[in-house]
Image (cartoon, rainbow, N blue to C red; front, side, top):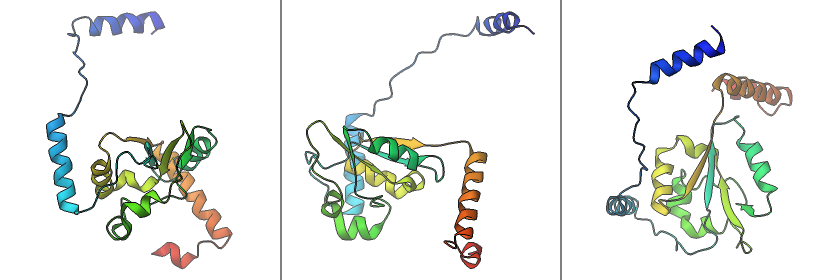
Length: 178
């Protein structure tokens, strides 16, 4: 079929569809506050001062070998952004979260200059239920940037990463078996 025929068929298919009302999904402030209190009660963690300028404004998460490193590289070169000193693994690590606490976490950031936003990149948060609830308890409006990609390409990239590691003796065959 030609492009005109496809367009005509599409218009015919949707002509009787009722327009859908699109609503902004905003959490009820009261229920969000209750959930926040429940999370804090379960963890018994002292939350940081939300006015602390070191707190990140967004967190980059994502699947391994999908471009989180490249994303960090691009963000690192932006003059209005400052990243944590390392991938923190704070929210999915009990020793860091419960043992070392938020003072440890905040010390991984510099005090930003004016109009500079701090951010964190820890890819493994995307698959951690514990991290998600802890991040929400810290700041229910923080932005998460989730980097994903085609799974076939990701698998190939992971395979090549492992092959390179074996070739450079970074990974031993015994380590790969476990």
